[in-house]
Length: 375
Image (cartoon, rainbow, N blue to C red):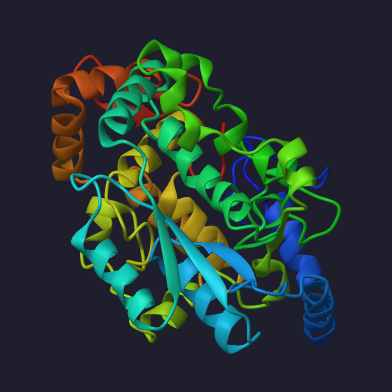
């Protein structure tokens, strides 16, 4: 395990590759951003959008996937108020046991702001079965739900015949998931190859659900994209101030309700992440045990690049909070999928990266590596 010499990105992030000098892809991209002519990029966006003129009888110019969170709220408002487009917003609906009241309120705020919104709601019982199976097989309850989340947007783009899909960040450039890189910095049609989607085939799901129940979990194929001329465009490529914190501030002043829970319970330094549900905090903790980085690492890496944190300050925050997760969230999740908290931890310990962590006889999990240094 090695760390980027500039931020706290470890080389254990899936699909990443450091430069020979030891710089992660995200830091390399950020350095190149300092020379960008943002006015020129805006002109590129205008030219791009001109190729997707609304057809006669078509009500919407583009489609945007939203959760009622910081990124989607910023996108929706910027696209409408700055670009003058009329977007159709699409949201995947969580079951009542999972969605937060805060998430519902944030979606209502978007609707009250004048947006049209379509919700996709997979069958709740199938959702629960797949979540439990994903946790049992992969120690990743979101293996199935993220398939549905990402698939809903292009599926509905096809259904409503809207070829232009506007997305947020480019995970290849801004996070370092290099398999998602497209022909240009804003081309998102290789999103299907991100780690979240590329390992999520349907075969394992058939152990607990029938194929006819799998429609919400099937990301349209490249042939489907070609047949319907679908194009995903990363808006983050055109926005010089795109970041976790900046998007949260932008959305908050426009009515977004933020988290009030502690960093120790969530790993959320600014209270702006995954506002529509709480269980993703479990997966961030488990990601930490699998790869040696969690939610706090993603936060501090951006803040270090923006010079709002020193690397030493980032090391302190990552050391203290990268494995944060409220026991209450764990108990709620276990109750939902029908397992005990002890069974949850037994499963988590089977998936710990033994190169990075030791499990003590009392069950305590300890790092083998030093944050910021590695192994």
